[in-house]
Image (cartoon, rainbow, N blue to C red; front, top):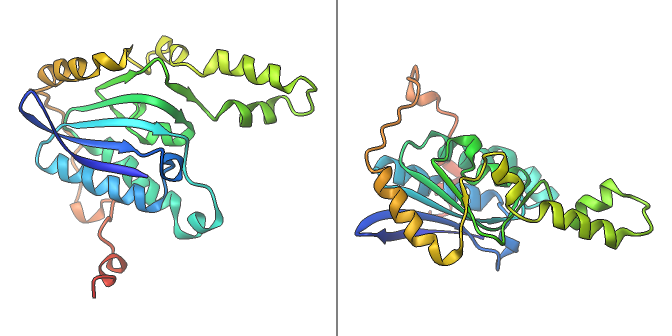
Length: 214
């Protein structure tokens, strides 16, 4: 449900992190969060710019994820992206719901550039779930869903607030990303000095992770 890899933009190597909606609807779970966090830290260590392709409906629900520590492991991806000082560009292709929207390199965690396609939906949750809470018992529930979709199931309210830099057509994405990478080539961002590295809250390589190899 999350894909990572490398690509080239005008001959420059970039790291790509993307949600996979064909698996678990693209929800973030424990494994996806750890996988994404490790890749982001790798790119940050070698000064490789990051491109985030976002289509995430939220974190995967369920008691299994909660007992496994989805909050702790989900925070690893959040921390890795917030701490990374390389150029970070996000393209919201479709869904961007709830806390997972913030985790996937939003403006709230120091993303450099955020774009959205016209098909993007940036909201707390989907229309059906939101209307079921806001208009419980309303006999005309279909009309309320349509009103909610018209108002929130598009990127323009978010762009008006400045959380999205521009709404672009999918065919213009590569051109925009290449221009931004040239602009961010000399980016120099430094994090506050830490007392000691061993107290970093991100511990990706846990002992239990290596046990499966033996």
